[in-house]
Length: 597
Image (cartoon, rainbow, N blue to C red; front, side):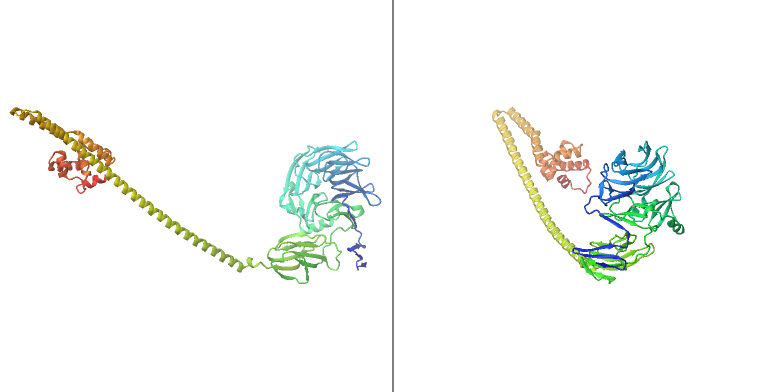
């Protein structure tokens, strides 16, 4: 055992060391077995000590042991003494102490904070808004909801129809109430202050019938219609002197139960503050001075980098890229037993906001990115102390050379992809060219085959025409032979034979059957020429159409004349008249035009 110069007794044990703060009046209760659970409220009632937890209400006996009060099982939010009555704000509603047990008097769930209005009325916040509780025949079982107060306020201050409350997420909430009509008249939510919900020095104050909100060391007065007015520094000093009695202060929303060392009860007649700790609670006997120390000289006890302790005296460090996990242990200068409550810290480069310093003084940061950092401490409002500066170098691939290498690799990949795409494009182009040439060659072959087919068909038709001509000629000669054979040789018969022969020849020369055969064969060889020609020139006569067909077959005037049984000059005249009907200029070749038609 060793006693420090401040009276702390250090006890060396087989499994470590304990410290007994002999000279300090604080009393710690550790719920090692976890019987109590998380403590939210406490009260002294009829010389007995009660605590409200998430397990129920527990009462302490003369030996310091706790036992559960019957009828209180479940989440307890508040314990309030109203006159001679003890009321409990419970998850199931509001409970009243009756005959050594708690009985349910209001079924409205989630009874949070209560403020007495007179001996028979009190205002209570619940899960679903504010309610007005009234006492009748010794029981607080008359309740009325306040319409419009849907925003939950688990702690509040009431003054002349005005309510200033703390919402667990929205921050400050202001209500103006008409209690006679049980309704809300006006509401305002200060959402711009919601970030201050987690601030250690957030509270509500009622001083000289004025409502104030405290954020850190600043005070804001709640004026008409819920307007917040920041108080000047001189008035803040005067106000801070008047606000020493914590009987009028309501700090922090209740459901922020993850925060430790929060004030859960204050008894001014005993100079006693009760705060919760991780496994129980602590009673602090403070006397009349409840203001936290303004100056906390802090220093680094040790620094750990990736789990290894390093020299804490080196205030500027250059760290490797892999040294990303840092731990800092802070302690007051000269005495590590001093309370650290009230100090704040921030690590610039990681988080520029001030955060409350943990009670154990241990700060841990994991997986920090490369960059420059500075660990700063603010013991008081106007004091900022830099404990350590360090810089974590980036990995080689996060530096400028690494960036240039990335850019080079990216450019190389792009160039390679571009080269491959060009090569693929060239191959595709060559393939398409080959396919195009093959298609053209196939088209040429097909056209040539069609041409040959037309020529074969044309020659077949010409052969058929020739055969038909021979047949007609043989028929005519046979008839001519019969005529001559059957006639007598007398002179009058010669004249008759001559007449019959001439008629026979004329009949065959003027027969339309030959033209019909020609027209049909011509249409098959030259497809729809005759149809298109007649549509284009509806005034064309059949004789002109026959001449156009012969000209399209590239026949000369001399070849056409004997077919039409006219002279060559007459054929030329017909060609001239056909050109005029077709409105062709003199420099247009009629044969070429008809062959392309």
